[in-house]
Length: 131
Image 1: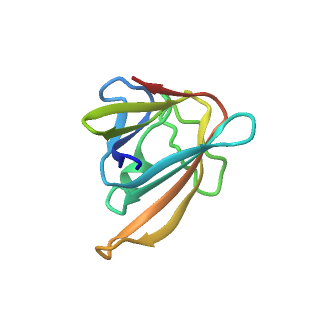
Image 2: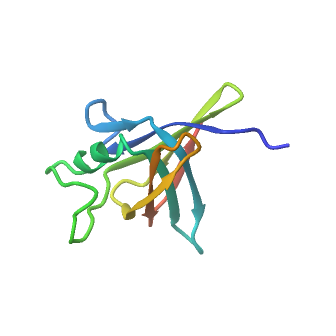
């Protein structure tokens, strides 16, 4: 029987340094799958209240955002998912500058009848899990 894994936060921003990223904690779901011989497709479902903060967060030192309406999305400097199971925590970090928002807009409704925003990201680099 599989052990349930809880996603405790998703981090997005310029770097892992405090003050350089945003912690999203209203997470309904986060997971990834490998694409072909390399790269990752990442799915994150966040509470609708977290949605505006995601779009306002800087992801590069020059103030660029992850999502550019009507334009090409910018590479994300720091993106990580933290999950826990059986009292153990691990963080999955995706390669800096190689992770992009591919789509953000599917609205879903959860059991509490609250809206959830589904975000698809693509990492064309590495994925590192620790510990």
